[in-house]
Image 1 (cartoon, rainbow, N blue to C red):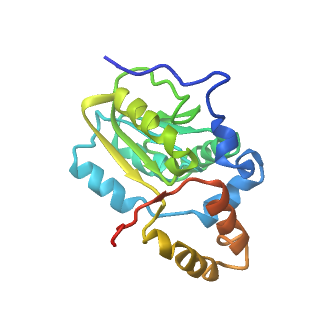
Image 2: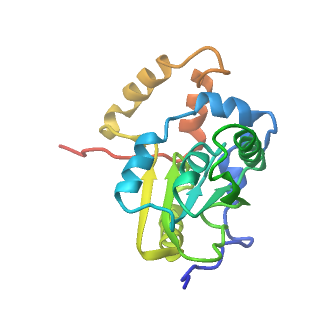
Length: 218
């Protein structure tokens, strides 16, 4: 039985699409995002299988992007829900499902469901989630909304459910932040089609909400 909370919406709530960034409503952004932010989910899936993910499992990919994880994990479980606030991203997920279904790796894609929503607005239905995976998505929410987001995830999960959370974190002393960030910017690519440019990294720091994990030593 699902203990899921109602979506957090209304005039007082934040707009998750707005906080995700203007690029996420750009239909042309999805394909480039897949190239720039692509990752290999093999290790994550192996770890989740070690935690019990299997043929009877329901998994939610929250902030799924172009569906890299959702499509890769589908053959190993019963139901996968790919959730993102961006219609542009979800269009790429649908494209990926079609491409895989036409190829030799067609096993599993038939039970990938696509839902437009976010941490605060997605409403889970059906059996409680056994696994929730989220990668580099929570930082789109300001800190005051991260805790409600995590509570909502917990409310839609089975009592023995597993939350697999990865995100972008600034790991340095607060006084070192300027120098650390500048070194990050210096390593940026000049080609926006293959990676993040300096301008894009600066925009991330200025407008998104990655947590600072400092040692706070004296």
